Length: 263
Image 1: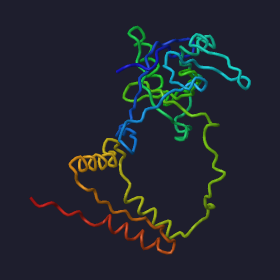
Image 2: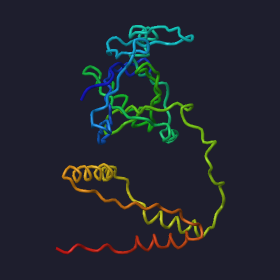
Image 3: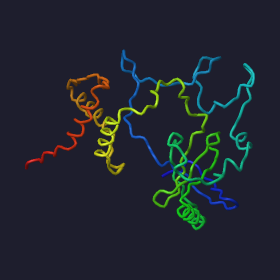
Image 4: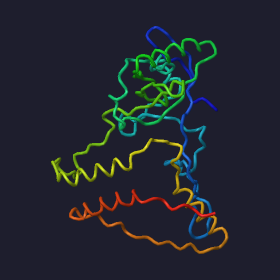
């Protein structure tokens, strides 16, 4: 596994050298773009607007446009000058209870691994977090941007979860959401019964991306020259007056014993 960042985890006056690793990866089917006419591959090119020709990556620099048509060129050394401590440190700024952090703020998890000479201090912070039953709030700089994060424990590993800033959340003002009402007590009670019937223990390993599997199935069929037939049906909205009957039906379906497979 290749680390995406290395520096120090700062805890008060204590520094814990660590390596950061991506803790998740997206499994998806990769599609290429082809020209419909002759099925030639489409590629993306970085073209100079003045010369109207493609520019190789090594000739491209980053720039900030401070006035129209006027640019300030930045290189990696300039970014390092901003604050070297920030670019090399994950600074813990405080501790909170995890339930104070809304799930809307979570972005992506990373594993933190200690350097060989910092294992004892790493373990000290881990055990202190366990006993306090709190998580750490931290800030760090990566990819030319300062991020906010929460550091918590997962299977004895310190995990850094990148967080969104509050101003990054989209406004809900334009959404049309029904007003909060008491509702029909019988309907609410029936809905609660259905929730109770469907309540289970969360086991993430049992959830799979079945959509990708269906895409793979179609790819296999098309590769053999088979015609793929699909049946699509629009899902109608549930009418409020039908909700009691549908809730009852849901409960009855859940109560029915499953048929055993005969050998």
